[in-house]
Each structure stands twice: as C-alpha cells, then as structure tokens.
Image (cartoon, rainbow, N blue to C red; front, side, top):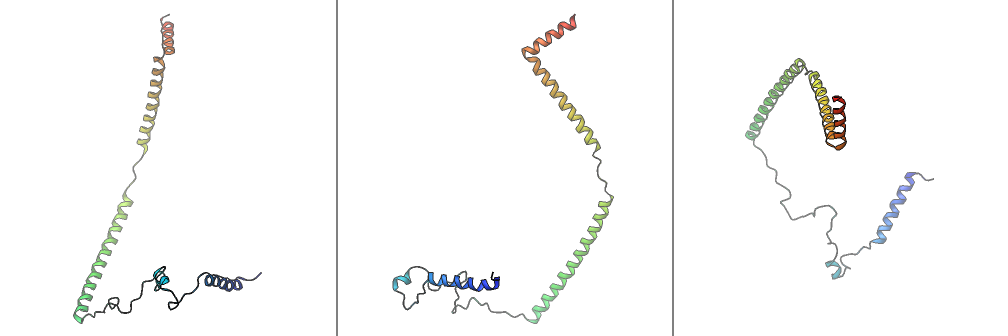
Amino acid sequence: MPSNDEIKPHNGDAVNADVAVAMPVVHEASATPDMLGRGMPQEFTFFQKKKRTGDETLTPALSYASVAQMTAFITRLDSAVATNSKTQRHIADLRALMADVARTMTPDAPEPARKTLRRSKWLFYGCLAVFGIGWFLLFPSGHNLLTQLAAFLAS
C-alpha cells in the first residue's frame, strides 16, 4: 500500500489534468467578438478587488506631527493613564468593601415558608374533597344517600 506522501502528488496531477481538459484556454487575440461580449469579463479576479494602477486615492498620504502636537498628545496620554490607575484603585477598594459586606450577611431562614406551603397544600386538598362531596350530593344518588342518612339518624 503506498504512503500518503506518494498519493498526494498523483492526486494533484489528476485534478489539474481534469481541469485543463474541462476548460480550454482562449487567448484574447484568437477570441471572436461574440465571445468577448458574453460570459465572464477578461479581467475577472476571484474574491479580489480589481487593481487600479492610475488611481492615487487608494494610498493615503502620511501626515507628520510636529513636536508641539506630540508633546500635547503625550501629556493627554499621561493624564489618562493617571486617571485609569485611580479608577482601578477605587474598584479594588469597592471589591474589598463588598467582600466584607457579603461575609456579614446571613441568608434568610426558609422554614416559615415551608409551614405556610404545607398548610396551603392541606387547605387545597380539603377544599377539593368538600367540593367533590358536594358535587356528588347534587346528583340523584347523592339525594338517595342523604335521605337514607337522615332516616338513620332520625330512628
């Protein structure tokens, strides 16, 4: 079995040969006027901008700063760096204060909420049972049960 290094050059040659057979090369001098009007333009570039040799606006002129402008820029840069370091110190102080506050805080005890939840759960199921029994007593079989119960209690 041939190694990968031996296979790669052969595959590239085969692909290049297929492309060469599939696309015949036409020179501008031998092309007919009909062929020049149709299809792709002669200056086609794949995913590239067309290069213009006569256009001077593509290369911006470099401007040079004077010594006074550079001094003013360096002064502003130094003041910005000093302000930034002050801000970083304030942020570090705030982080330390917030860490102290977080240590002193205690979480709320969720115990009363559980009792309320248990009570409301039993209240819900109790109401559901009472409504179910009341609904049953509205039907004729419920009326028969009530009359039998009343007769039993009266005797």
